[in-house]
Amino acid sequence: MQTTIKGLGPWCAALTGATGLALASLSNTAAAEDARVDGFVENATYAREGVGLSKFRNTIQLEGEKRYGNVGIFSNVSVNGTLRGSYDGVYDLNDDEYGSDAGGPVRLEDQIQGSVPHGGGIAPTPFFGFDTNQNPNEGMVVLGEHLHDQDNGVAFGVPVRPCDIDGRGCIDDYLDKDEDEMRFQEFNDRWDFIRELYVDFDLNFDNGNVLSTRLGKQQVIWGRTDLFRVLDVINPVDYSRNNIYDELEDIRIPMWILKSDYRMGPTEVFDGLAFDDLNFQVVWNFDQFRPHDIGQCGQPNVILDAGCFFRGMHNLWENGGTVANFAGATPDGGLATDFGPGQIGIRRAHMPDWKLSNTQLGLKLEGVYGDLGFSLNALTYRSQLPSLRGGIPAQNPFTDETAVWPSLIAFDIHFPRVNLVGGSLDYYSQGIDTVFRFETAYTSGEEFANTTREKLYSESDVLRYVIGADKNIFIPFLNENQSFLFSGQIFGQHILEHEREQRTYGEAGIPDWEHNWIATLLIQGFYMNNRLSPKLITAHDFRAQATTLAPSVDWIVTDNFKVTAGANVKVGEGARKFDDCRSCNPWDPFTQTPGVVNHQPGESAGVSGFEPLGRFKSGPIGMAQKEDEVQLTVRYSF
Image (cartoon, rainbow, N blue to C red; front, side, top):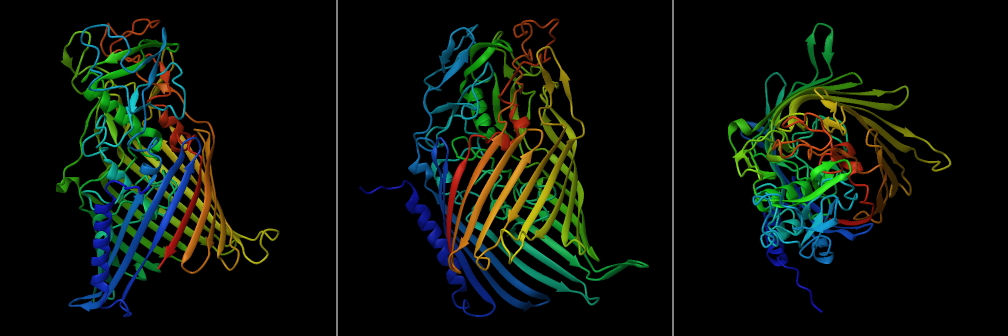
């Protein structure tokens, strides 16, 4: 039986055409010393516990460089390009979980009836309720159902099929991928199949200093750490590929950037203070703003499950829907409630248009002094993570009045302006043969969910840092001939204007931990002349009490063929509860919480559930506790 994969033909043709153009442009000089073309083809097959196939991604990548040498007043002129295209067959091979047949009917918890179907909640006035023809009970999952029970908390149905098949909950210009955009991830209106395309050139000055410039689509890497970013925030990241676990080089989203380095070489700044190297860098990201890709609900990787929360909330705003345990909620539950459109949910995402004030500018001073390397960094940019801001007009279903209501769970998505200052150090200690790394960043302008505020968010300065060390250690009983690499890091985050208060039924405020630390450890060995490399990566979130273990083995079969087998296993605590704002009393006196004395309008009583804010206490590791996988990747390089 022949199987036709919808949409594959046009995209393969586009990739083949782009590849052909790239090869043709270099074909006359490919054998010359000043040009090169190489690349790889790869298959990554992952299987996830409980759902089966979670990735069947087939990738082709081409990298080319053409060196021109001296051109006019410029030297070391070169043009570099990387093309990448992929097809993830999971949306066709496992479409019951991810794809056109995903989801189904859902039931939502109710304190009296036990559970009701989507569309079966109470409607206390004629202004409650929604059209089940417009928002039917099909193609959905219950928010967070893969991780936790409803357990007397907030829950609602979330559409999970691609947006061209089921458009409910798809947020224009933000989380609105159709099936082909998920299958063929690089082929979209941002032309992501052009992974990188830039020109390098130098301008030499009479004093020996050099101005080195790179202009084009590129990654700009600040900082000295892996996995969790502190200074490395210029490029957004695609978390939909493999959550936080892929190499940053593969998941940073290249942007159109101008980067110039004024290289001064050995420089004496003051009498007696001479640097072995000194460099000043200016980075201007002039591309149209782009946030992180957090994953759209219906994809295998949705970091923090936030994309599902956003899609479900936008569906509530656009079409109405049933919310579990809502009316009359206490810690023991409440009544499933049918809301109408425009009453609660997410209205829209404010995506910054291109204009000069929305571009991003960074400055870095970097140098070497003996065994010490350092940088001082400053950056003004747009937050690549979304902020939910309340205070939008919405309908009161008790009175039919439209107004701004205090602490109502009705939001717009914004991406606020953030300013960052920071720096990094690395030091090589010859005595103990160890590299030490330190990196810190202080930001202002970041926004956090906050259920003590009427708009349900607040701004805070944040201090982040990482301390790391790399050392080669011999373990004779494992390998008598070669050492093992040990690389450890500890990341700290401190929210400096953190707010949290005890209320009648629980805590209200900012769900994120005021102080938190995540530790990582890499252990890597080498055998068979470095052709066999076992590796273990671990990460532990101290406050979430969640850990991930990622063992793998790289086998370089030939100079061109590589096989990687591994797993990704999570242990520890998963979902956690926090104030869900069912008791925020936006429509006083109709929404006062039973058992609360003198319940004021807009004042949360602290009734808590897993959704939606508990995810920030669980973190990306805790929210992925049910995503254990085995993984196999094969790559042929040419």
